[in-house]
Length: 531
Image (cartoon, rainbow, N blue to C red; front, side, top):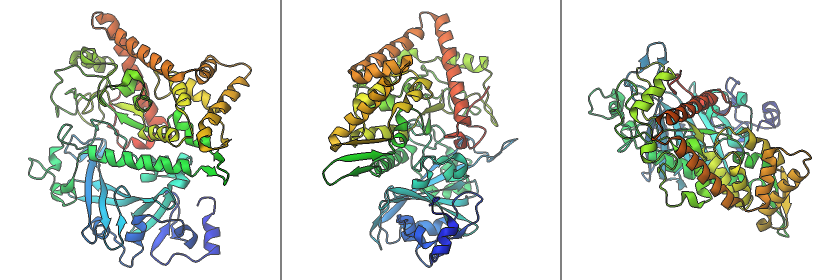
């Protein structure tokens, strides 16, 4: 749609009859939605809620329209970087908003349209009620894309499609939902257990002021939509399934199959960049509460505080390869800091004091769950996994790439530099031969490089050899090295190792807050404790 140009579309066609506007970027002047743009949109939010004379212009009306007929239901989720504090306004920091997310299940009865994972709504929750503009993303199965809408100044604006968002510069995304959805798909930044900053239950943090009848409960806790609140664990499943569908759609859109069965993939570099560098970032934490957060909302840790595995290696992508070192391990099992290798509360307090860590706008030195920082995103994980399942990349190429700088899951310069060897276009006689053709092209590029770096030489050997066993060996070696450094029998060396790891955590946090792909996700000064 960016390529067509608003002026050209308006000059060439009538505008859509319903009261829907087009606003391609924040601050742009809304114009009536042109018919050519409307013809490219086929998501259930548009067809059910906006293509009607009585467009919903409030959240209750929107929910009523989507659940009309009684065969659909709504579920709500609440997240906020100050989720542990009932105060809404904090000295020197302004308003600490809670984001209210709604998902839908079942079927819109009058039209027979399925809603499950097809519509997500975002707005804000205050003590007195639900406030702010409504933002909606709808899955367009026809075009394999998410469409974004916003209700602002009592008018619905179509903002853009994921077909236009992926790869667009940050300034194009503007503010609101578009600023955070850099690849165009769903984003749940605290994606993994224990979902720091989410109201959850029964095993994670519960914000009592969001529960009706609790002492100090917000009046808004009795709102029927808030009362339908569920744990972040439920939303994780919805987002993950949506990302798998989205990744598959992105991939298939770039593959052309001829009548003789031969295939060609174009834009491979944009599809597979997730293997070499982060294109999104999630946030993760220890599974343990330190008790040093927000003025004593949780009790002090009495068992060692494990450092999350995703801090040490890209565990999610490694698990998808089913390497032996990770077999038989639960999703929250600590591979690198099991048992007594986690931090004692005294050690953690020492680190926080030595690095002069404090939490902005609130008392305490820590987040609800300890060791909170960036981790590889679920979007990147699912893109790589689907590229293998859809027979575009093979496990050898994925394993070889992950084996480079295996202990740097996020910001590896060595791994990112190898991206230049990935071709943008590849063809093969059939789909089964495509992964081999991609790998052969990467090998050819490396072999044609006259003065290879150490990483390039290593990568070439891995691609021409048996990369999976070698990846397993390197992950094992890195695990053992971490455990040796944290050996409690040498407390001086252990503390030095913990300081180095904590410095890496601080550096990762700073990178998250400055990187174009993630800076807008820091929605409040209290996201990270800072020096």
